[in-house]
Amino acid sequence: MATMQTVQVELGTRSYPIYVSPGLFAEDGNAKELLRPYAAGRKVLIVADSNVAPLYAAAVERAVREVSGEETALCVFPAGEQSKNFETVAMICRTCAQNQLDRGSLIAGLGGGVTGDMAAFAASIYMRGIDCIQVPTSLLAMVDSGAGGKTGVDLPEGKNLIGSFYQPKAVLMDTEFLKTLPRRELINGFAELIKHAILFDRGLFDKLLNAGDDILTHPPMDEMTELIALSCGLKAGVVSRDEQEKGERMLLNLGHTFGHAIEKVQDFCGFEHGEAVGTGLAASARLARELGLLAQDEEEKIEEIVRKYELPMAIEDCKPEELLHAMYSDKKNRNGTIRLILPHAIGHCEVHHDVPDETILKIWESFLP
Ligand code: ADP
Ligand code: ZN
Image (cartoon, rainbow, N blue to C red; front, side, top):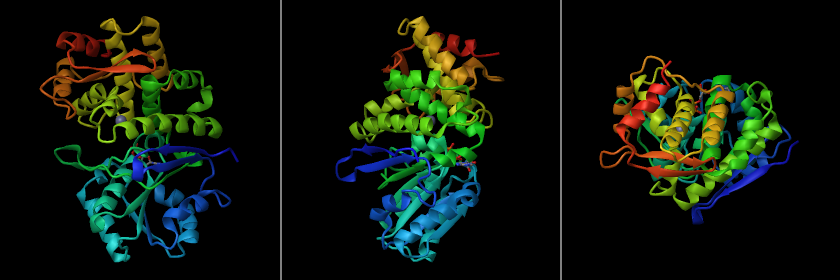
């Protein structure tokens, strides 16, 4: 078995480890040992969606049960963003109550970002807060939502409008789980991984750019473990320096002001989140080059990586003016200006507030087919 990688998220008394390894939850895997500090002698509720539960709940239950010494409870909800609401959170909390979970119990989120966000949100409010651990199964959740402690649910008025910061006690990532992830979801996850590389780590960027062509078809487990651990290390650093997004953590919005605008104008029925972020990364690079902040060959490399990971480089059926308007309504903006994160080099980005509308419109136009 490949060696396990460990990343520590440093947050004082709330610090926690992220473990990344293929086969963690295999019968002879390390999961039992890693779970012991959090699950021994405790009642555990596993939360999973209807796609992930049939695939992996049994393996996780087996590991948890051996350590906790009790039957585990399972809460399954219908897969998809449309489940990310208060009703599902209420169902998770009710399942906790029906299974006599108490202040000393544990919730484990097993799944993608939707599951992780809701499991952690439920854990943060059930009995005024009980412990949770995360077992991310999508690449997006592994590199993005698995580490960082953001929880959330959607409202009819908008996505992620409700939520809190609530850090897990540990995050266990079994990269073998990625083998069943649909290709489109894998691509989504790569968008956030590429984002971390453009923000902070040229070496990681080159690894991603030079990865073999099988990376999307048969992602090699050792390589994935390394890439995910590097990405988590970068994000963990940001989160420990700026847990509540008052400063540096804003950088993680690279590609997202553009991406959110696309998702919004498409009424969340077009690109998936990662796809929109991928286009947003290319748009940020083009804009940075247009403003003379980024060298041409750097910008070309960013477009090349976006294409390599089959992220979209053209937006159909959207008007540039609508996209610009949507950028103004992004909840991350302040004082009526558009806040953009722009690359100055691969591995170094900065926050900008003062980009003229005409320049942004020109960039949007360049992405129309
Ligand atoms: P995110 O992209 O934020 O992780 P979701 O939690 O909705 O969002 O996960 C994306 C989709 O991938 C969902 O349909 C989910 O059920 C599915 N999924 C997550 N992990 C796996 C996996 N390891 N194998 C197969 N499907 C998975
Ligand atoms: Zn994102």
